[in-house]
Image (cartoon, rainbow, N blue to C red; front, side):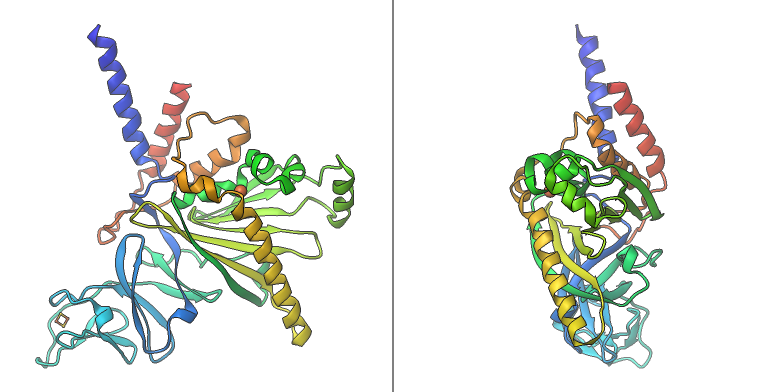
Length: 373
Ligand code: FES
Ligand SMILES: [Fe+2]
């Protein structure tokens, strides 16, 4: 009688350990990539602020040259928090004994010693785009800051939308946009259009995955027949994901595309911290400016419509994808793609150990799922 129970428990353990290795929804694994840090406007020149993101204590400051920099928070001398200090040129000076670190984090001055000892603070690659400061979680950036593919070459205008926190992992919120079934149940306005969605899946690089609808508007009712006149080919509905945590959606008729970026990051409390960013192509002249502003406000309304219907479920759900069905294919593709990405160990970026075994583990998880039927 005991044997089957042992077999069962070994199988359960194996399942649990495989789930630990799964990247999707795993707060212990940070996928290497760009994450939003702080709105640019919130950081004035020559100011320093504390910043906690992805479970790590950091500082962000803007030097004399106007550039934002992000470093670890604690001074390597005795551990004073560097946000208590002050910006000096393009470096940061600790409050406690006035050691100064340059913009690469190397100790540049030690007031009581001519030759400063060897000491440094970890500095992180930092960029600004769309009115937002971004941090590259990893050693050196291997990909550009998230962008809207169709606006890549042109000038853009951006506006920040809502800032929010939801009680689930960013990956769980991200797949919402490719969860065809829920359009019918949660977003009635999009329901009849969703009948015709079919995603072509591709990627620009290993960090980025694109889901592009390739079907035309279904001509199943009068409203859709009218709508179909505004699309020469497929209904525009495109999701582009960056490290599974930032996603841009492009929707709208051929003559007017709306672009909404949902920038998310996991925190140490098991939540997703998010910021929406509205983007449009920049038009010239005064009237161009007015049209841009209208476009950004409309994009905000479209984004809020999609975000609003799901708010309740994200506060309480516990992700447990036990019974995938055919309609969940895009979500499974998303999970597979994440499994191949390079990850950092949660709360321990110092080691920066790349998990090259992730692809193998992904294969194991798939095999395990197949075996479970
Ligand atoms: S603790 Fe920073 S200089 Fe001493
Ligand atoms: Fe939704």
